Every structure is written in structure tokens, then in C-alpha cells.
Length: 137
Image 1: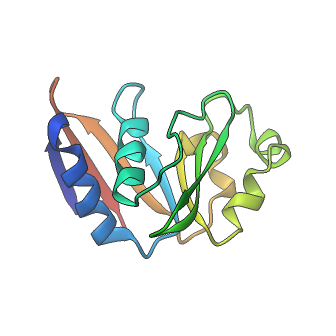
Image 2 (image 1 turned 90 degrees about the horizontal axis):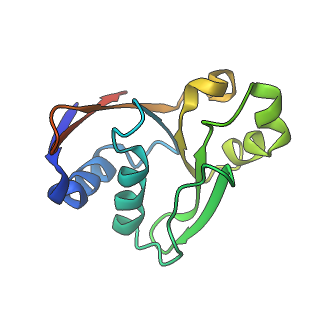
Image 3 (image 1 turned 90 degrees about the vertical axis):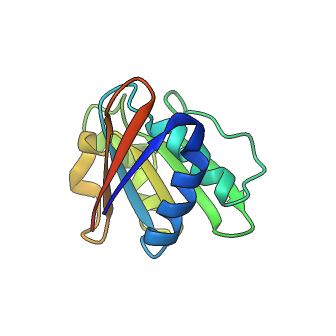
């Protein structure tokens, strides 16, 4: 499945994505810096009616949000991770095994921790205003 969207339509894309993939608990967001991973997670959290402050977990590594639709959501950014051992020490393994939704940016930093049933999303820039999400189910 492929979803293309202009930046002003990201909330519609997030709703479409949620409708197609809400059965997956762990979402791995792949893409270059600036391709919109954090922005997409923000739109997904808005779709899920998160009222907490939604921000990039680049320095915190893990942000936890509450949703009346999806329960606990972990938003993780593994960009600063050196290896899987550091990820485990940060508590990432516990989040992944919790049964809660996990949205993971930069999953390639500790790909061995991701379970087989992880949904992989490739985010690409088509031009300055248009993005593409490819779901790898």
C-alpha cells in the first residue's frame, strides 16, 4: 500500500494509515532526515486524540502519550543510539514487549530488537510539498 500526501493533508494521510494498519502494535518509520517521520507521528497522535504535548524524543529517546482511542503510545527516536545494548539499557525492549503501540523513528539503529510482526513504513520526499508512505506489510 502506498499513500501520497501534500503536507497540508497529513492529517488525512494519518487517518488513512491508522485505518489500514491499526492492528500492528509496532510501527518502524524509515526515511532520511527531514522526510517527515516526527511530523507523521504527531499527525497519528492527533488522529488518536492524544492530549499530551507531542514532541520529538530525539534527546529523551522515549516519549509516552495517552490516547482514549489507543491507550498508551510510546514514541521512540533511536537516532542517537549506538547499538542494541544501549537501546536495551534505555528501556526500549520493555516498551516493545509491553503490547502498547510503539512508533519508532530510526529503527535501523537497533533493528534486531524489533519483533517479526513489526509494520515497516518507508517515508520518502517526492518534492518540497509531497511525501509518500509505503507500507511494508
